[in-house]
Length: 129
Image (tube, rainbow, N blue to C red; front, top):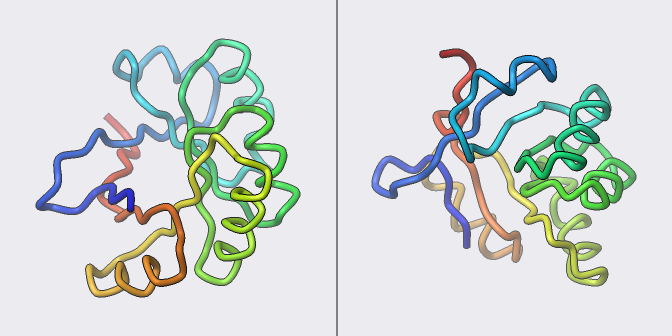
């Protein structure tokens, strides 16, 4: 299981960007956080074309399919959508990993029992530098 942002496990934070121009202000080789895929398609396409690692939130199966096709590194989904996406990801051998946002360590066990690829804690995302 992938665990991003847990205080006891070293991790590389995700760097939030809202516009393509902001990518230049992020550390080299960092993974970007673009927010919901539906509002970040142009940035996701730019990342795909320039081989920049990024993460998005999928709000539907369609979002996840498109994000994976554009080589997202991680696809975040809520606890209700994640099991459906995980099954699709396994069927179609997604390169992207399905990740569920959590706020408490106690949530990790339930997510693991659902067979989801991983979890991410809020502190793993840097919203401004």
